[in-house]
Length: 198
Image 1: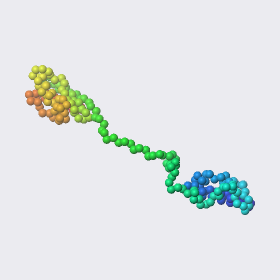
Image 2: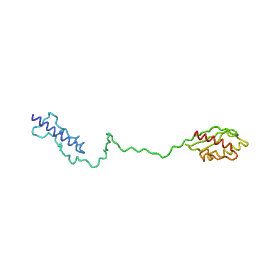
Image 3: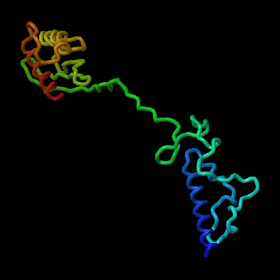
Image 4: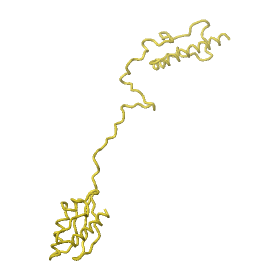
């Protein structure tokens, strides 16, 4: 009975010493390197009555307080990096995504207005848009030659092209070309229908 009591007491003392050493900061590695002689006695192992716990020659006896050589250093070692919560090591924070300030290029498209019949024939206005802005306009199907052809040329010169009145005003609210009222009116009606489609 006395031997069993001494075995239990020895086991408790050895376990306490290991817990203290393992729990002390910076001594995790030291507690793993304990010689087998300092490991807690197995149940049933009995030390000599009244004698000290057997130790191997040259072994260090564990103490309740960590030794000066086992104190943690103020700076972490160069080869040890802090572990993240998931247990994996990270070398650096991920790079922030780049933001671009350049707007996407507007798409260019063409829209053709309805065919409008007038006194000298019929015409349609075709506009080219970049995004929502009109960048070009032209009339198609206008009469050629003679006096009606001359009126058509005057209307085209005033309204159409990338520097014409349609691009400048961005609407069908155009001034009437003198001497070409019918042609001007037909042009504006077809232009308005093209703008409505766009």
